[in-house]
Amino acid sequence: MFEDKSVQRLAIDRLGSSSKSVVPVVNYAFCEQGERGAMDQDFLDLPEDDNLAFMTLESEFRIEFRTATEDQNSNWEFEAADYMNKTLAAAKALNIEALDYYTAVSHNSQKFGESFWTFVRDVDNVLIQMRVHGSRRSKQNSVAFTEVQKNKIHALIEKIRSAVEESSANVSKKEKVFNILATLAKEVSKPRTALARFGDLARSLAGVSKDVAEEGAEPWWKWAKLIFGEVDEAKDAEPKLPAPEEIKKIEPPRKELPEPKARDLDDEIPF
Image: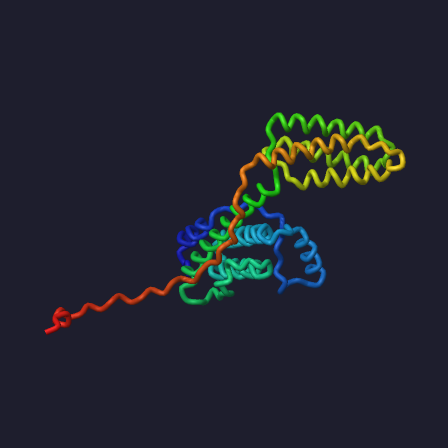
């Protein structure tokens, strides 16, 4: 399609750059049994969230396309069709219904180039919706603290650390609590802290408490409850955001109606 290499280069640049993905992609059709097993292991690294998994895979496919078409001897149409088909396969596997309108394509089809760039624009549309959707959901599952609250939580974390250190709990459980406290302290210093971190803290303290249940000394809980109180207060102070809308499907292009034919003026005269 693009015999002129300068035109092909322009086509490559129009895709833009993508962030590096951690998920390697391998073609099943050319895998031996051992290679397929390795690929299955690699795909275990995909995020559990379907939208995040799709964004990860699409980024990898786009990088593959850009890298392949940088070779002057590459077949642009073949690589473009490969990108489209992989992206559609990922969308289908991950229940991304926004791209249901599209089907697998052949690089030999008519007007392939036009179809490809329309597809890229539609994929970008879906990716932006996913980012907005993810941002709203992230705020629902996290909390922002004031500087006063952050300082108070850091002080309470240190009190919990000291109380656990002085207890007779199992060393491995102590280390688990210390690691969780270190992670929590880092996140509290950030603009927002995931609510899941406080759940991690509660579970780890429960494990330590089980070891010292007979002694009846669990001083860390009073500090933990004060932290949870700060979380509740901060979350209540945040504005309530509307739930994010579902990602909209890409609609097929509307068929244009033919222009009305010009009629003879005599037809307008009723006599």
